[in-house]
Image (cartoon, rainbow over all chains, first blue to last red; front, side, top):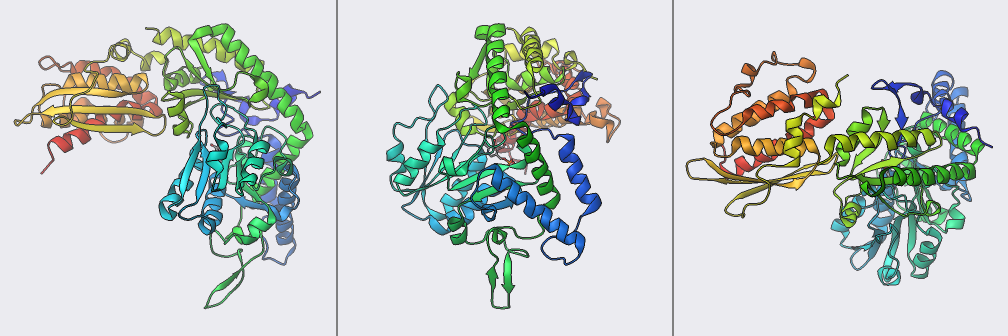
Length: 409
Length: 165
Ligand SMILES: Cc1ncc(COP(=O)(O)O)c(C=O)c1O
């Protein structure tokens, strides 16, 4: 049994007050808070072993190199990757998706080709494809989203026909929908396409196994999983990485440079030009240790329970005044709840909640095509993590009433 | 700490609930411009008819957004309808002053004389006084963009209708 109150106490940010009230952080889908252990690991790195990596022969340089390579192994184990050389560190998920588009897409896509994405993608998995498509002239195809928040897979075979890549989120950052990645991977492979999985919202919350998923690429971002901002991950199967041209050029990514040209370093360093984010890798490794100690199954169980509680409480308290988007069944979704409340604009909802120290996100959540499909210009979004509890939901449900008091027509 | 009553003044809520000059004008002849707030997705569409004498004979506001962006655009439409383009430009400058001069009290002394126009004076049937209610927005810096969205969109429309030569 996990002591969730003790977990909450590990997060220094949550001990402060905001606008006179204790901070209630319900925006982990945006970025997560950091446990003391992650903060300590990063300052300890700077206090004891800071040195540039892969190029110093002295003691602390070796230790710093071990630190980033140790973090790479930890990440690989966390997603059950066959080998840690398949783990590329990037700045964030956005950079990792751009790396896939520029490097893999640049070499493999042209006129007559197609890339399939879905209407529930984050802009980070849309715009890189728009940018590349306008240069290369391939077609971008869209899997639609149904009213119940699930993907419409009825025409999947048609969409995948002639496609070279399916790039899709494992979990929607707006609806919380968990997508059937294994099934999508099989379908993509049956059509000779690869599958890139945006795990930004999934990896922090559910046990992840790239081999069981059948993924070819997995992308995620450290700051949403208790780690620091400034580090993201691209995992891809080794032979895919081997065949891909480099992304950014510079130091670290080369074996040799002459006046005539250069030869690239081995994977994954081929994709890591310049001085990497060592402290951030150390922080991410500490975050993974922390999550592993709780156990990802426990994390998921906690979030399913809390999501069920939130769905129930908000409905009981506010009835028809609240519309919650996404799957109604907690087991089919993550702890991300987008809602529209009593015709109060989400920005105003967020303002009223902020007055009580409740942090939620209002807007289009970097998913404008999805919001257009849902037929709403904006939503308020609550997103849960391990430090949230029922009292956070109770306070949210209670404070929403104030928004209705101010804005009732 | 500023309270919600500083932000959601009654007159603001009134304009939000019953927006003035809401709708569309046929374009052309009306000039139509769109403004977006990428932070929250608010959209404002401004339509204006400007006659040969540089008079704003009609204005309509479309789009969607939060109480602050919508009420500010509504008040703006009431304040510039029937006025001249140069007057509307001065008013835009004054309104932006109202939105930022108080922000951390940097630049100017914050007095209305500073803004080149007196916001509190009623002139004719335009109600400049209402705009004062938006002063509270400066205490909520993230909302300033909401309040100025319509005004920036109007500025674009004026530039199209009557380019500064
Ligand atoms: C599904 C999804 N993909 C990608 C991203 C981009 O993450 P980052 O901003 O860390 O690059 C996010 C985060 O907002 C997300 O929710």
